[in-house]
Amino acid sequence: MQNLPEPAQRAEKQAQQEQAKKKEPPKKPNIYAPFTLVSEFTNNKQVCGAKFSPCGNFVVAGGMVGGIYRWDATKEFAPLPDLTGHGGWIQALTFAPHSTKFYSGDSWGRLRAWDAAQADDKPLWKVDDAHAAWIRQLAVSPDGKLVATAGRDGFVRLWDAVTGK
View 1 (spheres, one colour):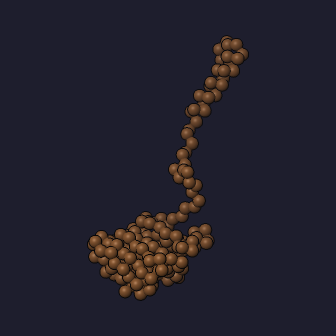
View 2 (cartoon, helix red, strand yellow):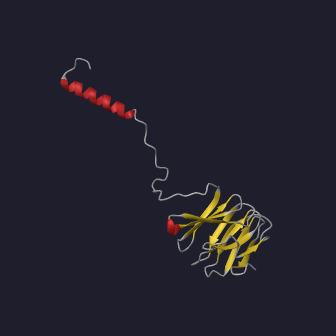
View 3 (spheres, helix red, strand yellow):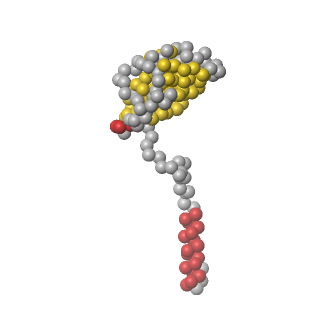
């Protein structure tokens, strides 16, 4: 430091310390703010959407290559075996109320019913030609008796939730 009176030396030293702080790399921003990321899990495959079961015990996600991916939320999101039976993207997923039963629709117009807790990968029922094109959305009636599908073909269709008829 130069030949400065003591208070001036302290001020210059403080200014140097402030400048050194400015040169520190900026802290990484929280991209989830104001939320806190609680958990994340993957199967290393692209997914189109995800849903929690009404009981909160399962998470299902529709894949870009025709698979449905499942995790057990009661066991720190442990992966469960994939469900197969679709050919295209699975963007439409919905659960029946108060149930582990869920429905999936794909880009080929296929509709499937599943149970998130099932051990095998066979659908409970299936409709291969539910729509002439992509099933964009699914909904289940509040009483759980009907499944509504909305397709790219311009139709909304209602299905029996138990049989798929």
